[in-house]
Length: 75
Image (tube, rainbow, N blue to C red; front, side, top):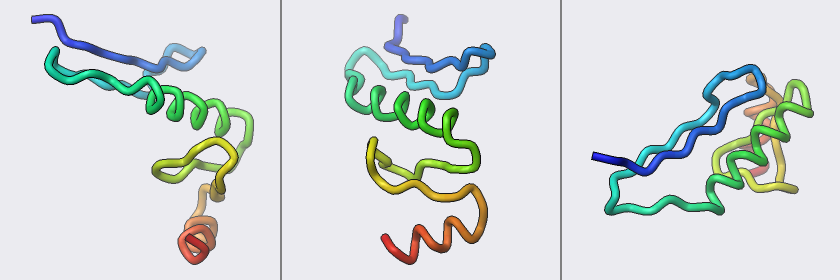
């Protein structure tokens, strides 16, 4: 059976994200774009990570315990 799939692969050939759906459920282009933008952002901003549901232009956080605490305290 064929399934619907999306794979985001880094320039180094590492699978960074994958989504596989049955034929009965479609994929979201806007979600795929959001995830791709998040990977591009963190690749250009060393030490920062994107929280769940991050969108371009919204707050990120430092990739450490203090960064998470600060982010969660303000959100």
